[in-house]
Length: 312
Image (cartoon, rainbow, N blue to C red; front, side, top):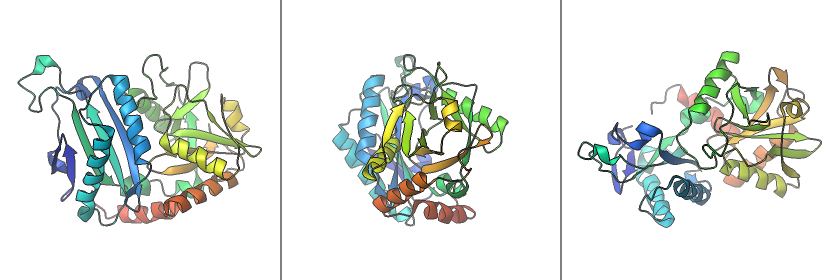
């Protein structure tokens, strides 16, 4: 939008001018790694954890972007700083995209050349978070989809990459089952892995369980939730979780960078626990809000109202 700029291979250009070629490997193969971070009070939350994972993803994909992690950190902070006048005090999503560039056969018709492309953009979380405001109080409905997770031996989900059509297919299947439903994927054995961009937790008898970190993205928000729980003295265990276990759980929730935590109050068309956000979820959300200095659920309600008139 007017006033926002994007870091693009060492330069800052207007957001609407940030484009890559149709011959770039990102479009041709989904050959791109990325990260999504967010701010609280316009300060990045666990930025270095996100960048460390970005560089692990680049090593996995064998992409050398030409920047050290310290240089990427500095470029990120400068991108935020340059955009502050255009953000109206809003918190933002910070997106890092690193593409391999174009293949040599397209040399001469790709204006960016053949080297990897690094872009960093920020966009207010008004729509991302505002559209979910009601779910903080009423919860969401998760359904097991026919589309399963891709085993790590094919595409390792621990490397955050853009080859994610299986996530989109799972989302399409979920909304055909119920319009507002969100997908929950399973592995080849039928154990629960993750959502399409979220990590999954249940609580039972005072203990928190979350899927083993094998065929999943090891989320930064997942890690934050585990740390908060242990800080509150709540035991956390990584385990194989079956759909049966969710039906027997006292409560459940998902974590993801944009919304932090959202309770799961229905699973496969049945109530989870008493069908309301549980006490452990509420304790964790309060602790998270206290840590970042933002009432996370209240901000979502504020952004929901703002979204009615906001233009990105």
